[in-house]
Every structure is written in structure tokens, then in C-alpha cells.
Image (cartoon, rainbow, N blue to C red; front, side, top):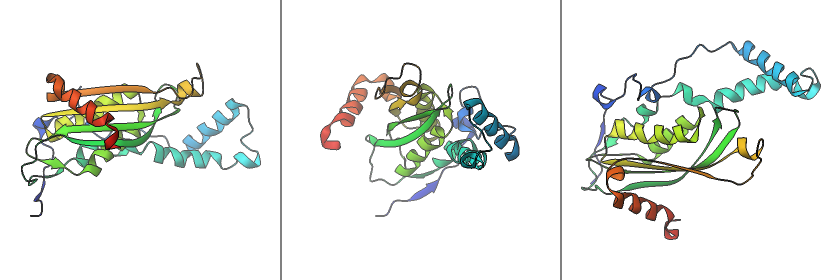
Length: 222
């Protein structure tokens, strides 16, 4: 039997509203400068780097950078909660773990504005309804396309899924390389940072954490 698709718009009690702990669910509002101002800022940075913004190879760089920034940071124009609004109720009674592994992403460190490159692993325990797998990947992508710390990114993904879907629990593990460590400062290439966030049953029942990690690391699931 085909699954029954229902739309579940975010309800106020689900936390999809401006609040101290749920502000990450909303589209950020900011006074963007004009494109001309952004391009002028890039010209200034080119001069700060020690180059001539008027030389042939750099003449169009400010326009290219401004355009690239709108793509790289497009997460500021999107609401991750909206991606989870369409859910499936008829799943033949399935209520066990749903695990989406190896969701690749690229983000930018909010301290140095250099890339963070990694993978996110996201699991949840359904409570009567499930969401399309691509929607979880979209949530990861939207948050990643903002200035981030890995710790905040991990927590935002988990809390958004928990607040909107209201499952029995959410588990998120992110492993990533930070270019602010690889390209500058201590310059340790290849080092990986792991962060986790657990909610609900994953937080209160250690066996669920163990099961999540076992499924994640089992080579048969690669």
C-alpha cells in the first residue's frame, strides 16, 4: 500500500518561533549591504592581502566573490524547519531507528571564515511519522551554509529535528576537518573533529547511543 502523505505545518508549541533556544529555526533577518558595497569590501581585502585589485586577473574578482557568497551562505535565506513539514504516517508500523549516514557538507568557520568540510550522521526514533530522507540532508545543508562552529551546527540539526518532528529521540554525529587548523595557525592537516548531540531516548537510554554508534561504525553498512 502506498504511504499516506500528510502535511504538518509547524505548530507554535513545537518551538518553531523566535525564542532563545529556537532562534536557529527561523530565517535570520539582517540588513544586507548593497552588492556594490560588498564588491568594494572585496576590493579592500584584495589590497589588504597585498595585491592590486585593478590588475587583469582581479578586475572581476569582487563580482565573483559577491556572487559566490550568496551561494555559499544561502542558508541564511532558508528555514530548516519548513523542510520537515511534510511527513509520512503510514509506514507499516515502523518505529525503529532511521539512520542517515555520510551526509557530506561544507561550511565556514565563524571565527576565520575559512571552510569546514565534513560528514554528518543523523538518526531519529520515529513517533508515529517519518520524514523524507532528503529533507534531513536539506536541514544539514541549510545550517551548514551559514557561518558556524561545529558544536553549534551539531546542536542545531538535532534540536530542529526534535522540535519539529517530535520523535522519541535524535542522535547527530559530525566529523569534520577545519581549514582554520589545516591552513593557518597550528597547520595540522588531516586532523578531524567529532561532535555529538543526543536528545530523548538517545540521551536517557545508553543502549540507544551504543546501538547508534554500532550501526554507524559497522563496516557492513558502508
